[in-house]
Length: 193
Image (cartoon, rainbow, N blue to C red; front, side, top):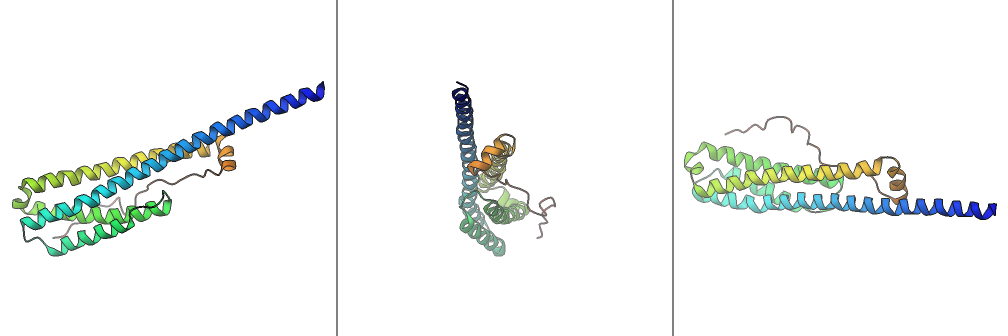
């Protein structure tokens, strides 16, 4: 009888451990999918920026004899950002896309600063509408990055905390990296005319 009781206890313990790993795995999968979903939203807002930028440039170009070098810089930054869009949610890809998108944002901000210097451009309805959309898109990117970082933090909290870290190690789930500011992002952007 003692042997059968020990077998039952071991079977129950193995069952409990099995159920724990099963449910923990499902939690990790859901949180991993949330990270992927948030990364897709970041890329979606990047794509919106890429689609909106040529419209802004076309309006500005059509309204004035604008600085050609500024328009070329935006077109080049947009093309580079377009080529860099896509890929998995990896730290290397975050950094690459963030750098390309930051270049495009900086070029777009230079356009806004230059246009604000010319009252005739600032007064046009088309430009105002596109400027509002561009500014709104920058806010969307910020929100998408924040949501992505929150999803990564939630996932990492599950993967790194005890006893989840044991299950994560056995099941192959590793912590992820979120967005971080690029070096020098804390300094003001200098705009020269």
